[in-house]
Length: 204
Image (tube, rainbow, N blue to C red; front, top):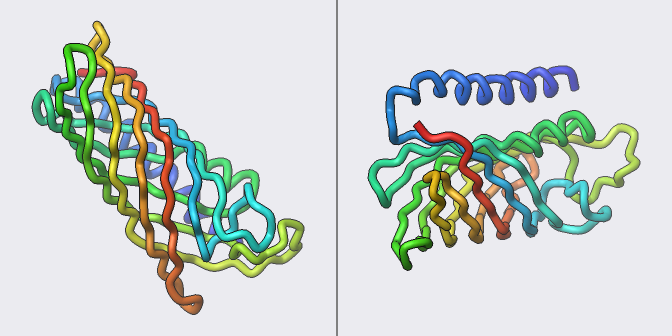
């Protein structure tokens, strides 16, 4: 249990430090921006416990608030990194579990009119879990916990609304798929979709 908390803390602190270190460097490059990404959706999950669903239910609601750093290759193409913040901290503090899914993204904008772009692109990241399975009762005193990990694959279909300040205001839907690999529980399947909103904060 203590080892899990140490690994969890190191992971979160390391990713936050990487994002913070990148900020001074970004001042020298006019193609970098920082924003908030908010997502809310649902998923089928035949392996992990969902704290928002009753015992025995495979999957449930999903939500997170992320920091996102984007590098603008040109007026249409963007690469970025999404750092989950809310869900890892909430699961670690409130439920003594680890769910951490950082992701690299690529976005391509197609102009619709002077005020709006269609945005599409894939995402590729990793999913890390430590905690009980979906059959574990919520009030179990000593639940059997396990570690699982796998690739996180997604795609974005969204609309970006132009602002006078140049900051991004985007809304879209992101379907995703994750095979989760474990030591002795076989392979789990996670599939779902989330409504996603992005709000640009700073651009250098």
